[in-house]
Image (cartoon, rainbow over all chains, first blue to last red; front, side):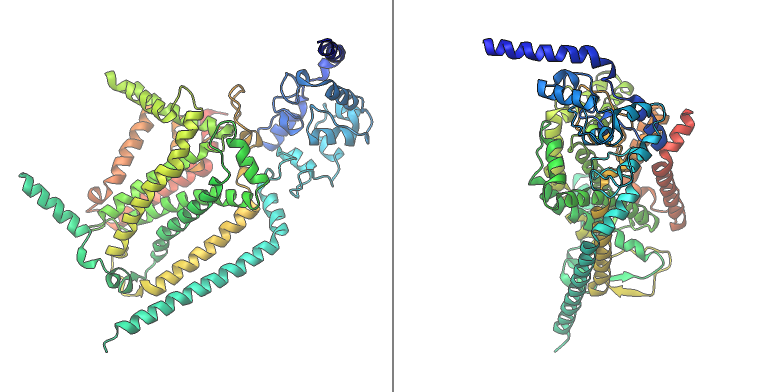
Length: 201
Length: 367
């Protein structure tokens, strides 16, 4: 009982200063969402960068109100990552959100709220977190999910996957051609046998 | 009319449509001939529809091994299939792409059959069974759409079911309650939930396949029994043997289409055409995301419903369905030229509303 009380108290003492001090910056940065939606014409939500598709406010999974003391520690560490290159593992962000903070730092991220179009260039050209062949900066501009390999610009996905699976495509072409060739000959042969048996003796 | 006379007429009608003398291998396969003319390409559409249906059955059976028809696990099981099952993403994509391709082929098959007047006596029942198969294909699309249990699936199903209840507003007296009862019967509970998913799942994987197999069997049997219709006004002098010449060509078309389907399914995820929030698990407490729409093959009724009064579209669609079923009798004396014009007009409407429906809607609504 005492242990439980102590655990609750320590959790309360950790949560209160965080909520009191940081709740003003807890909401998702809607400037980025508005920019992406206008530019791409695709509806997006907080799940592009956040762990929870409804954003960080609330008590659900990946939201401020539902974090454990250990997670709050990681959140505070991420919030203090003002310069780029620091290890970031915020529980309210997904892999892409953490990647943004780690790549450009919190300071520049806050600056980009007024110029969200510049975030794409700041992300660099090489990062492709979902491995679908479309770089993250492009997925950000297109309003597609940088962590879902089935989501992306359809044409780019098609070209990248065609290049990736060219061996499979060549093999299936061979298999299909040979199957059709075999079946066609089987049909022709059956027809000839049938005709031969029908001829008057 | 006496009962015996009526029975006699019905018996004659059936005997003419299912002639016992032609029910043999020689007549139905070995001696069957296919006319060769400028519309011959249309003879392959029925076979293609059959091909896509076979693909649907095979891939659908594969998906059944992993899919969980419960509201708590349906979305997760689909994600599991896509992410972790070997070849799961490919099988799911083939299923999704071939379902659209099947419906496209059914519609094209129906239009060319109409334009070629292939519903003429004694093929009336072939036409009627084909129209019912088209309705069943739409049923497959509607019930299958819900199964992934994501935002677009559940919300679009809600809109679809809600429109059934709206019909009650235009019916008199006690009849006005019928659509609500019908909706609740399909839905199984007050809102779209577990009972709805269970029912749609049962309809999608058991009821509709059984109905299609029975009807498709009768449809194909009738086609083989009566042979290909001449298709054009002047009887074609050039003909080719169905077995093996046409069958080999048909098989080659199947092969090419299979390759295209395989490459598209391998390289182009079906979901990539949706905004990703629509593919998230359905959240009953969350707000409805933007962009909820039915599948593309329902656009021909969806956009008119968005723009025009419900009763008008309901009336037109019902009259349209009845006319479609009675085509062999209504258009018995109509020339092929007129039929072709009607078919082209219908095709143009379908293409325009499907491709430009959203733009037309935004233009007319001033968005």
